[in-house]
Image (cartoon, rainbow, N blue to C red; front, side, top):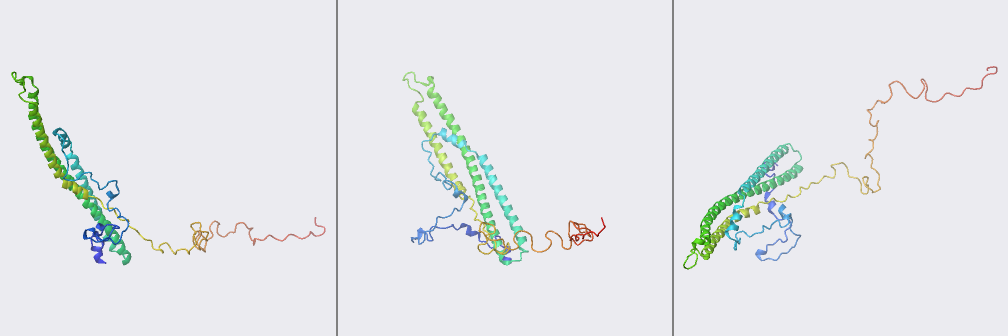
Length: 322
């Protein structure tokens, strides 16, 4: 039993948290065997499994399509990201991880102190394993919080990098295309003999298209850098805790009533002896040997010297006595 006391999870195997509940088949389709048992559907393993579309990220990492978007739209998308807010969320997840570690440490320490003075080996083993299961869940949740914290911090770094590159690209675009558009629309920039613009419309369109292409390439590269962090965020989910069932021993609250004696319901039985009411024998509610409520030495309600029965009626009066 000392080994269980010193085990980080008090004899509970944390690897069992990764075993799916109610698997649909005991065989894997990958090895070409037909399933021999079809059981009930697997129970949710994560709290997000109970949400609507909890596993649907809405995008396929690494396959983003920015086709058809111009530099103006992409600039708004990238510059609209909020790396500061993302870093703040990362810090919050880190705080959650630290809090869970503190809870686990306190639970482990208090349980070890309790186990040192536990006298019932069987009850101790069951209790410690349940505490170990709780600690395993706390550890799993802490790991998920750390994954989220690290991933969000990485996303914030990619955001800052993307915004710096986009800012530079958009500055170049504004300067070069701006100058071309200004010259294209300036009436003085027209050949007086041929009546043609020195900067034709086609030149402006080609230059804009070149910058649109560079912006899409930047967006695709940034999206590919997001992908691994988004995958980490998908894995940073809290496992759904298994209900810690407890069984009360039948004798914990005294002997069980005989069958059919439903003294607490509508079974029509009688109240067993000693159940409810006053306890048998003695002056109920009074210490023995005393009769509270009357002064000592007197028997109120009877005349002094009387045994409690009325005296006999007087006989007939003697003659001559009025």
